[in-house]
Length: 127
Image (cartoon, rainbow, N blue to C red; front, side, top):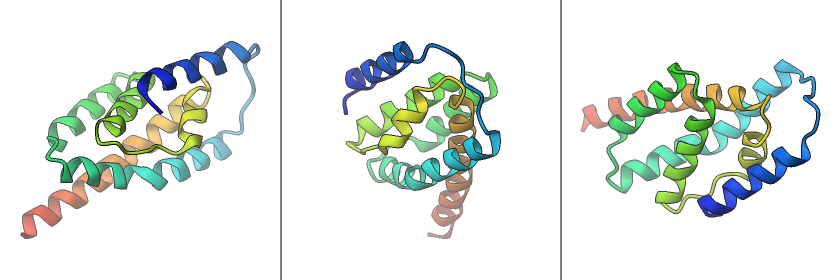
């Protein structure tokens, strides 16, 4: 899926959603954690292996999350995946198109990203 296709998909889903829906916060959090856990580590590893500056990327993701710019964080992750020809799960795309679920997905991604980044830093220091 290209970035253009992603934006089109999100726009279409948003156009179909007419009323805000009540969500189960626990279920939303668990779903976001499962989705993030299924690809975040692999994406980070792929970026590292392709010589991207993961430290700068991590700082940018943290800044987006800290400023509560959840949509930008998710879109940035999608752009990163696209840059290394990494396929994000379809559920990531679906969840990112739902306004009420975006903050949960953003939180899960940053949590996993920071954990995996710290693991990579330790592994790099050991070599």
